Length: 279
Length: 336
Image (cartoon, rainbow over all chains, first blue to last red; front, side, top):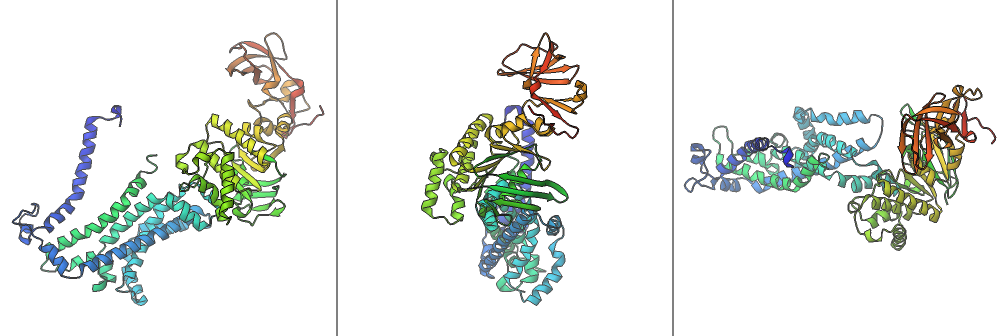
């Protein structure tokens, strides 16, 4: 930034605001991580303190790794999340392409209909979804979760992606048509690479609620073989006694895979958010 | 090679009619330019020829064959776009070769054709680069190369020069003219720039509000415009239009006279007026005057002239170059 436009006071205030937000956002994560490394008594006595040699304990992690099949839970969560993201991106991008590229009767209405899901929480339909899954014999399968999450993620994906697809030059698509590319090749080879930042944005927005969801795993797939991490962590929370060490350790571990996925998408994400703003 | 016939092409978006029945014949090897103000439907017409838009009704024949139901890639056309429309993830070479690859041409043939086109456009040093690493002029040359490689029956250009700066525009214009001479291919070119139209075309099609106003060679349009619209659109500065009654002429409604066909004198002449503004362009001097008979008049003088605002001058039109228009704004044809 040029000297003429940067006032030290203003810059300091901006940084203060950003820093305090960062602290606010990181505090729960910090609390979880720190306390997962302490003994049970230490957690209750001084929740804010860092682990000291006397209070340090890995009991939480030991419990988590011994009781229950946590590796399996992780696997389930990953399968569900990755499969859902892939389906949301694929179908969302295809629907967005059709909406933004082709002029057909009811185009706008269809767009509104597909975006309606952003405003209506899918959980309102839980009972009907459960009935449907029961009659389809999909209860206690990961498929049921993937289906529900795909449906849940699509509205936002279509909404964001169709806006981005409108920005892809018509000339480019027409050049492809004249060169003999099929509509599918135009979509996969010309348009998708150009909206990659938007895809990453959608992937992140889709991923986090799915990974963190407790509701649908609890209702649709509570079986031992299909438990997800969030559901697995619940077994340490009892009505009367809660094994806080284990809960915190499980949650700390659950952060890792999301972090990895996020890092993969984040470079694209930043480009997605700033595209158009900075050219 | 490539001839084109359009018969009563109509195109409507909803209730809004963009093309109102276009008939046109383009002979093999002709360079035809569609020109007109923005929104006149010239780009839409080009897209209809390319097959990127479906006409609401009408027939498009390329080399005598009806192509209305043929997809763009099978029409034997190539198109150059205003925004270049190069594939960003492919190298220059692959950009040029993609169309042939899709059509299943064998590799050796693609190689030779790409090599030929790139030599023609001096693109050899850039073949391995991606479009992002090229300048605007180079990108447009690649786009033209991509069209040449297909060896089409028809070249379609959609305002190919409007994204280039002035110097590059002249240079690329020359290249396109040279290309047409060498390839002897049929070219259809859309522009809103009348200089491009006048310098490149064998035949100009002036479009206005979705209809053809006049078709003719550049000089025909300049010397014998069919109506006021064409008269005003072709030529810069614009033709002067004077209500005929102010000149005491009852046989026409409007009299037109081009700025270059008026002589100025300080001493005597037909119309007495006062200079309002003068533009000195070096080669030309444009004088704007307000005369009692004609109102505002634009005069173009060749070379440098020392007129200044508020000078009193006399203007004399060249009688041989008067254009007369009737009450329907159509030219009244008189034998010269």
